Structures are given as C-alpha cells and as structure tokens.
Image 1 (spheres, one colour):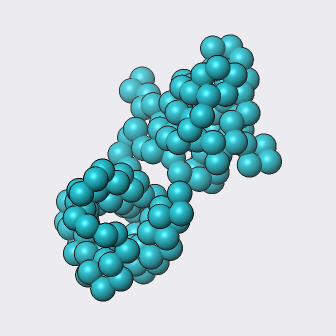
Image 2 (cartoon, helix red, strand yellow):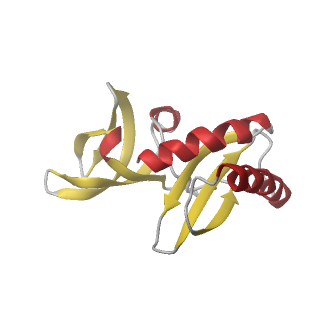
Length: 151
C-alpha cells in the first residue's frame, strides 16, 4: 500500500496537470518484471492518443524519480465501462450500480461480494449482496469494479 501511495503522489499531479482526471493506479510487483497500470479519464472521453501522451510524460517523470527498482511495464488506459474503483468518492458516484468487490481478508467467511452499492457510511462502502447489507471498510477492499449494465 505504501508503494501505491508513493506512486500516486508522484503521478497524480502529472496527469491532472495535463488536463486529465487521475482515476487511479494499480502497481503489480512480480519478481523482476512489474506492471504499473494508470487509469485516466476526461469529460470528453479518452482515446489512444491521450494515453500515449500521458504515457510519454509519466515515463519521463519515472526515469528521473526512479521509484520502482527493476524492470516494469507502464500501461496507461481509460477505466472503461467496468471501471475499477479506488476511493470513497468513486464508490459514492456509483450508488445504485452493481459492483464486484474482493477483500484483502475474509469478512464473515467470505472475500468476494457481488451486489449493489447503497451508500457510504463513515469510511465504509455499503452494499447489498445476496439480500444482505454489508458495511465494507475501504481499507479492507483489495479490488472493486463496476459491473456494466447493458440494458
């Protein structure tokens, strides 16, 4: 978590300074070759040229600051329709939507939840899954992702 916070502090101002919304990032260390995936958004949408532009700028910053030891793959992407959720504001913006949540540790005997976001309470994400309401602390959420509705 500390590395993700360090990378966010380094990368978010660059993305915002370029006129994009910094949606979040995933850092996936994997031995000698890691992945750094950065999600950007814009009110007018994101295209491949935007991703390339942000990628070039972030690469330059990463070369100077060198926060990741070893080799890594840098990916810049739109969050897409099945967007990952990283903070309480993002969860709050999708109240009423279906979400898949995976916890870092089991809660009431389970780590995976699929349900509807019903609210935010004191740093917890409230969802209804399997006809039960759950309060899931944000810090216990490993991954959260919107389930697109194509209806």
